[in-house]
Image (cartoon, rainbow, N blue to C red; front, side):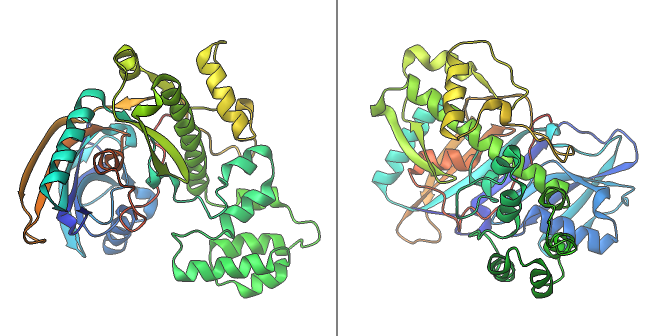
Length: 406
């Protein structure tokens, strides 16, 4: 079985609430293929000579796909644009910029290729199970692009006040997603860590070098706390979201393990953790699990004594943390999100059909169409159906920004 053989094998259509009712923000539909959202934004900025802060988008869409989504440009022109794998269609003007909370759902088309009759039948049985019981609403790999080879989240030492380790993880640790030039700059920094004037001289001009320059100005008593604060706020917000998402995944895993018999649980790897997926939910737990909204963990979460508080305390203990420590003391321009997230999601408007595979002759393909509410991952659905982890090559999308209320 093969996924994403061509861009049209993975299609996403964003559905939002924002309408063009008049105002200073031009609203556009962005259609793109084989290009990431941020790359597309860069093209628009260069083509129209706008500044990046004028642009807003609700979500990041996969690079290896055919996708449509909405963007706004403050003071944008009343015109369309085509360039390098993107098409921009002007829809009108809106009163405010588009926001992640505007997303209602995403409509997906996924084509699974190179299948035989037994694998088609197995996938169809799994689809029936998913329609009945749903799937665990884990944050998937796209959320964890900043996790380096140590498996330590940047936000963990940040919360504990270890700014040097947080800075090292952010600027120097090897990450499999790094480009070759980035990999080399990180190697130099690891070799010269602590020798700040030498680091400054060795590094190419970049945001990383600007931070090291600050340390090089006072090499005897480096101020790691202030140096960490020099890193762009949007990156630091992503690192908080990644760690909070990891903690939430661990909480959901504990809920499933406590309420599902072992024989119905199968493991899938997400962010280096083997997390349980259920093949079916016990009938006595199905209704409340479908309705269960699990809180996002942070120091602002105050729970009465009970099973959920005990579960979260156990998860935090395994992390070497306490819930009260899941907060940012400095700098105070980035925060952990607050709110709740459904424990289980059910695909809506699900259809599937088989046909002869037009790429792999003599084989069949299975085409799925379904809608997911905001915040749920199609890759989780695909993993459940195929029983395969989404490989790094297939999951090369940009790291997602947090969408819950901050």
